[in-house]
Length: 232
Image (tube, rainbow, N blue to C red):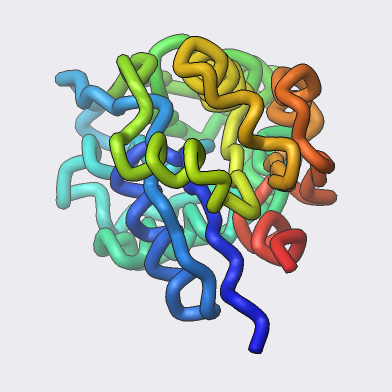
């Protein structure tokens, strides 16, 4: 009988645990290794908006319940599912990148529609620009920031040291850079020679090239479902 694959999940919480639950359902053994931590930030929101646009599910916890009836446009299916679970009633998924998200919003919303764009610190600047160029009014609000994790979780360090990790899921370029730094400083890069990295995008794959993975696989579309399809 073939042993189940052990998958290192580098995604920050709460997404990391959600991904781990999906992996368990599919017969994998997940090991959590969040490489970033998420810090909520207070924000002041407009009293009204015609739609909400989010490029990351991390923006959802910062939104008040009063916005739940407002149409919400999400960058991908997993983010859309998280929005529905959070209570949003009219959710649309671009099933792609920020570029597809901007295009979906532009062709769906009327000219000069008022959009709320909650995001992370330093994030979604290009998305806001694209929406404004399409004739939409954008209120960008920073509702969280990410910080590098100081070290790998002990369970992740132990699994890497024992060379038990078969796959490593990398969900962003920032996560990739921090993962590379953490495993290198801990002297664990040597343990990756039999592991395969699964990156959400080419940009997320690039910092992994020097770590000596057996292979690096990149999702054809930047979402979790396409990453999961690359695990076997």
